[in-house]
Structures are given as C-alpha cells and as structure tokens.
Length: 287
Ligand code: AMP
Ligand code: FE
Ligand code: FE
Ligand code: ZN
Image (tube, rainbow, N blue to C red; front, side, top):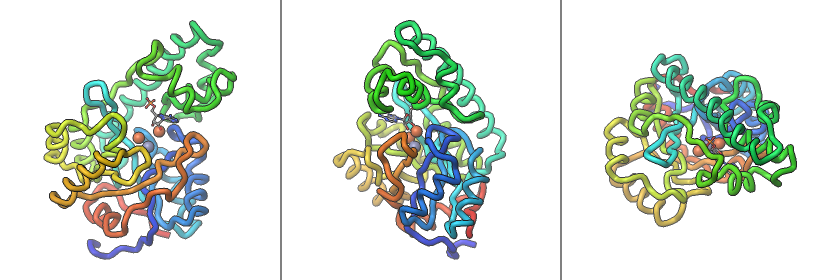
C-alpha cells in the first residue's frame, strides 16, 4: 500500500554474495548487515536473482527487511555501466533472457581470459572453477581469487590493477546491453533502476545517454558510494534535485573481496519508500 511502510532504517541497498562475486552466502551477507546495525538490506548480485530466497529467509530470522535486487550489467561503448534493479519480477521473460545471455557470455569470456592468462602464468580453468559456487555469475573477481590461490598476486585489488586490467593483454569485454535497454528491461519487469556508482573514475556518462535512460524510466543515482568522486557527484546531486530523482547510498559489500563494509553508506528512509512505492515487480520481505 503506497504510503505505508513497514521497513526501518538504516538501509543498505547494495550487497553481493557468492551468487556473484561476493565471498559469503546470502545468509552470511544478511548476518553481516545485521552485525553492522542495518535494519533493511538488499541483495544485488550481478545479473542474477538466485540468492533472494536464502537472503529473505535469513533477513526475516534476524528481524530485518529484505529488498530483492540485482546489479544488471550494461555497457556504453568501452565502459561498463552497472544498473541496480530493485523489486523486479524475477520471472519476467525478457529480463531473464537477458540475464541468462549475460551470464553465459561471462562464462565464455572467463574461459577465454583464462586461456590467455595460462600462456604466461601457471593458471588453469579448474583453478577458476574452484573459486566459484555452482551457478554463480562468473566475473574477473573469480579469476583474481584463482590468481591469489596460485600465489601470483596478493589480493583482488592487485589482480585488477595488473593481470585483469582492461588495458592489458588478457582482458576480454563481456557481452552486456546498452544502458538504455537495461533500464527498459528493468522497467518492463516492474522494477526501479538506479545507476550504481555513477560518478566513478570513468567519469559521468554522456548527458545524452543519461537523458535517454531517464526517458526510459531510470529512477535515479547511487550517490553515496566510496568510488564516487566529489565533483561529478555534486553534478548528479543537482540533477537529482532538479528532476526529483531517487538518490541512494550503499556499501557495495563483497565480503572479503573488497574493503567495503555494510552500512558505510546508507539510503534515507524517504528514498527507500519511493523505491518500494514505485515498484510493481516484487515486494520487500518484512520480518
Ligand atoms: P567483471 O564484471 O567480471 O568485469 O568484473 C568487475 C567486478 O570486479 C566488479 O563487479 C567489482 O565488484 C569487481 N572489482 C573491480 N575492481 C576491483 C578491485 N580493485 N578489487 C576488487 N574487486 C574489484
Ligand atoms: Fe562486483
Ligand atoms: Fe558495480
Ligand atoms: Zn556492486
């Protein structure tokens, strides 16, 4: 019912589990959120909703509200764009077809990257498989973990700045839809789309792309995120105020995979309420 909200803050709407590139199970992620004092948390694994059921059950047992989410991969020219998709219908056929396609292309791409890396380093595909959970969305972080396990780099960060760097010899881009298509798919599945870490090192998306995303139903921007840079964040904050857009703040927790801690950025209650009111694809799970 619009206007009636049973969730309580503080709310962190961007966390990852082993269903993509986090290092903890969905239940462990919810437990971590709870330990850090959060009362509402989303699970936003890359290109999959497969962790929702476990997270919802764990959140309920901890007395927390669970917001189902996903971080949908998109790409504009050379740059990857991450579109947070909240409260989508997980069975929406076009969205499912797209996430299936992205996940299968990610698997092919990881194999190709492994082939290239194995020419120069002592690493085989099985090393990478050993770092992934069955059915997980595979990404460079799993290759990074395999490189760490082989003692070739110290941690994920070192892997990303060396062997896995987009400028390097081993990098292969993944298939992903353009950002406008991503927003259309989320809207079609009854969800609310928010551009994740929109003011990072890659710089702002061109205005024209952003306008087309807004016309397609983009809900707003994740302005509270450790990777956002100040000047670009201010630009988006002005735009958000002018257009009355949704703004969020989140941790982008990946367990041990990143230093980000649950609740290091949070989303205001009024903004969580707007996301819930606007979505028709699925509902939060209350304790
Ligand atoms: P991919 O989508 O497979 O190209 O990998 C991108 C993912 O790697 C992102 O979702 C990030 O979570 C993760 N990532 C990017 N840079 C780093 C880093 N320096 N340390 C740890 N994880 C990273
Ligand atoms: Fe990630
Ligand atoms: Fe992201
Ligand atoms: Zn993320």
